[in-house]
Length: 286
Image (cartoon, rainbow, N blue to C red; front, side):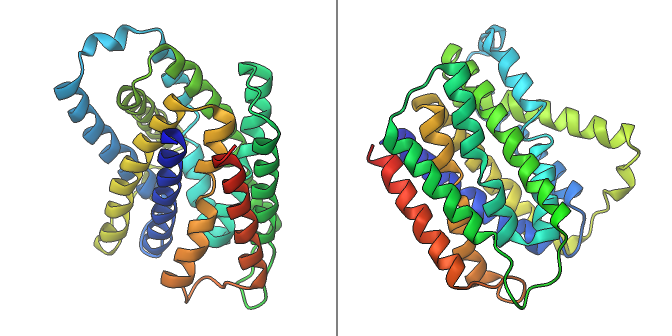
């Protein structure tokens, strides 16, 4: 149950982060949120690693996989996810991104030869079914374009690819703190370079009003990142990823509580949440 528990805690952490980003985006760009998140996570994790582990671990072949993963996620995944939150709303972007389990399970089946059992596949299908119900257009919402769905869908696909690459690295070096630090630092460098190359550095404008939300989101994402790697190091991709991606369930609940002026919860949302709970139950008690 260790891997499953860490995965669910990570899901809750990512949901809190989504709500905070939604609030902070009223005052500053999502690019600033991404940079703050990467920077805080990298500083915290490297501080922990320097004090707790021999740096000779950095010579492990697993570092290549962590760097490769970091060039994909969270470098571009988080930017796509944050952009989706701003354009679609947290209660829609989060659920749509949650389709990542299907991508991850298919890749794990083909690349890692994982065979988790029928209940896990059925649980993943229920989770995705709930996700699509949660993503249904509701009356009274602000207008959004269907093309904007590409942002969370792109994040989902890249997440599925990246999680399998991370698992390959963790099979060699099962240290979630080193893995998370290398991955996040790589993402920080890649994302910063992309801003320079595309001449988007001008979008990084600090507004003090965003600091409480973005700063808290950065700290929460640090904890969620470590929990995600801990769950991956202990469990199968096909089990862990669906559980981590139950964060839409928590996003919907938190949106109803803290984003009443921006998000709307309906019967479809409740039904989708129930399906996701059923999926989580099947996966956890496989």
